[in-house]
Image (cartoon, rainbow, N blue to C red; front, side, top):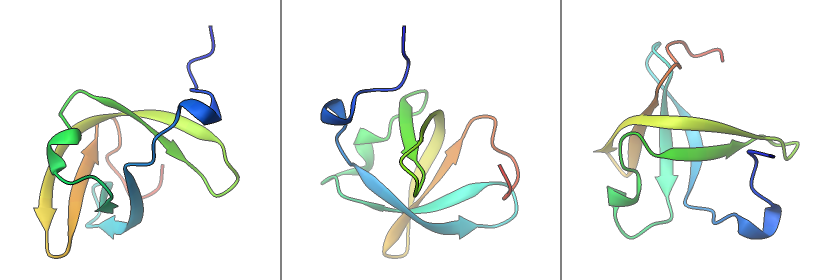
Length: 80
């Protein structure tokens, strides 16, 4: 079974716009009306600029300035 969703099954909910700190947290620009779509323990797929997709489990999310911060389980450095 393929764990990567087909391209037509994907809904873009945010864009990673940067990093925050040294512990692997990301700054995101959410396209959703509310951050409640980013529930802890939910799986999201992060796509690279080449189109590859990798699943990540959300640890937490919180508003930050005009964006939001998200932490993914297992990501604890800026380089992953």
